[in-house]
Length: 329
Ligand SMILES: NC(=O)c1ccc[n+]([C@@H]2O[C@H](COP(=O)([O-])OP(=O)(O)OC[C@H]3O[C@@H](n4cnc5c(N)ncnc54)[C@H](O)[C@@H]3O)[C@@H](O)[C@H]2O)c1
Image (cartoon, rainbow, N blue to C red):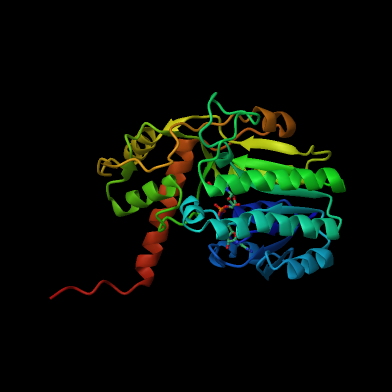
């Protein structure tokens, strides 16, 4: 049994990662300050006697280091951070504090507690306006926003500390992650959760631009599995790895898949392209596949169908709990 400390445990990817680790028989310490995560996401995990949870802001370095020193985990999976690109533009200092400062806090703690391995949630945002598709790890890095810059800086800080202090540092560059527990009610959340929410409401999805921009969608269970493999594989080498499906899907194709599942979904509305929106994004997962024998298990159409059904069950359950809507007189 391996003991793994997960930061951002109550978030979208964090809670799925915790569930996967617990299901595989490991001991997990979760840390989260509920900035964007929720207790609800941890409902399954909290039923396990192998799960310990601490409400904590990891940028409070002394407290966090104290926790890591007392828990002595075999691995830290660092997922906590400011996730919204828009927020990183609106408040670049907060982006640096939570994303770069958060990573430095993890580095300080793992050095102090001699933790041998750290897995870091990096992002396709490090590539920004790159070329040569599918993107390989050595592609040009030209982040288009402070969020991508902070991820790139975090990767460099971790790699440098790992070399100097002799621990393993693995940065996993997730592409567009989708699946259950991703909040659809924020204008900043992933395009899949927003479009699936449109299915639930039977409202026209809004596409910014012409809809021909592409993304590489990867299911959150595949990302959780990648996190778990990176944490547990014997002899895992330090480095940067794309965690992507390798499949390029346009937003028009995405809406097409959803309309095939739900023919009553209205045709999309188009709005002005958002500044800084990249045109193409698709990652080459070959490096990660070679190390981990990883290949994504979830197809986009099956993952979308599951998500549409998950949200319709959820809203049905909610409507049964709520009193019926008052009728306007
Ligand atoms: N969702 C994606 O498509 C995607 C893609 C690439 C990379 N990532 C990265 O994966 C990680 C997880 O993202 P997510 O989509 O699950 O987002 P999320 O917002 O659901 O999860 C982040 C979690 O971190 C917690 N947190 C934030 N700051 C904290 C702090 N200082 N101390 C303690 N907890 C803190 C939040 O409360 C939240 O539960 C992030 O680092 C994100 O940048 C996500």
